[in-house]
Image (tube, rainbow, N blue to C red):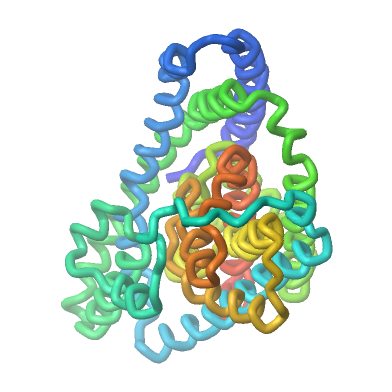
Length: 414
């Protein structure tokens, strides 16, 4: 089902080499593109974009079935609704605490650094962003519940798949012996999908090479300095968030924290280089089980985490929203900022772990608080670089959450 440690280390090395090679080729192409028509440049980059796109499509192909099968099995194997409620309660307690810390940290840092204060942009007379990004509470709650499992899977609506899986898993467990047949079948399907994951992950270095080539070729190395202060402050925030999460994890699993980091380094690197925490999901399941997390807890907690516990994305949302407000000289008092934080606590749930999903939520937040959505254009150029950090932090956040819940349940092996 999984690769050996030696093969895993080799794959990590290949991914790093691919990243460096992609940056180098991207720099060469960027120099070559100078003064040339954009259309012809895009034509040259098509094959490289295709490499990354195929890999992400292959990952998306298996994520929804994997979430469904593993979560149903994870819920059903708990044995009773009482056990599901106990583990679910502990999981959501960690998720809510982590969400609040992530959002609050973003708010504190952007107020401290004031990255947008020096831009002095005029407020546009009319908003240029689309209004459909706005998301009311009623719309969000309605959207949680799927009208069709097939439709939810086809659109990769992970939160809807999670809701169906929870109902299906509880109902399967309630059937007793009759449900055992379903559990065994879905468990076997989950293992087949994880085997597929091993094959797909072998393509990761090629995808990383293509993705990095496209980003640097289009934006140039100058993108690293154009918004260097904003990028640096955001990544400083991610490192602070990482330190907080690791300290909280150390309180529960002590000296095994570093060992956990060693196990998740490859999924984290995949998320960083592809801009997608979703791309790391299948491999992350394997590595957490190898670390010693109980399979039943991993199958239950990790899929929920991808809907409710995207730590990096949540920190970015307050950071980006307040940065845009600062850029237009819009002062938001403490009460308004706390209101924004609470709104984001709700609207950030259920966003898929896919590239730039956070921008939709940021757009909705800007509209809610009468901040010009046109300010999103300030971030589009550097969003791929920011998304790398967001995605990798999402992976770390869900990994430590799974390990801690396993410890709470006394099911952490080793």
